[in-house]
Length: 112
Length: 110
Image (cartoon, rainbow over all chains, first blue to last red; front, side):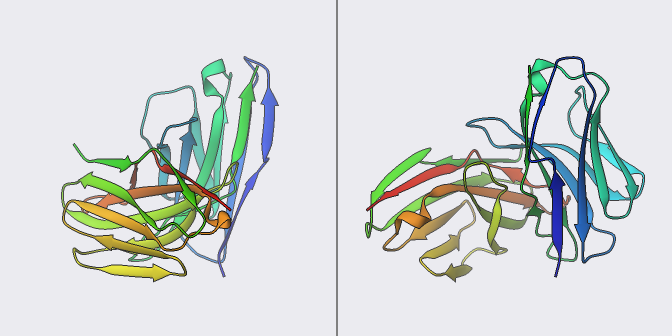
């Protein structure tokens, strides 16, 4: 069966520090991969999605970037964090005709 | 513009008191409508996908229905463990991306 791993679960970082969040998927090949941010009381905002290695689409201009170095690995990065980058970050995958998205456990990022 | 609106924002129910959550949508060609459950501090958990008007899906105390403009998530005789935020999302025919509503926060009291 397929599983998605996302880490760390929580992260506290100072303003101006770098960021790297990692997401890996097991049990499927060539999945679509997604990064979302969820602010309190708001819906999920799609940040990036990828349909293959090295293929990244950015949905909103921001201080973040994403990379997909391997088929089942998706990384969210920043060179210098801003206060506004605080939030709950979720990774998701989908595959096949039904294209149902399955989510990881999320990372709570606090930028202080 | 494709969009999803969920109502109510919050719902408080007594255990056993049945109710419905609404998801209204506008989309350029519906490919699928998705319901998720999200517990505090966790990622959304997939519940149902509906693809065409008139379709219904059931899982335990939950039943999802779909029309051309909205979907309902019916909760029959809810229990405290059904307390969570329920998210609705739509997928348009031209994309793999989902558009999410802001969710309905359900609290069920014993």
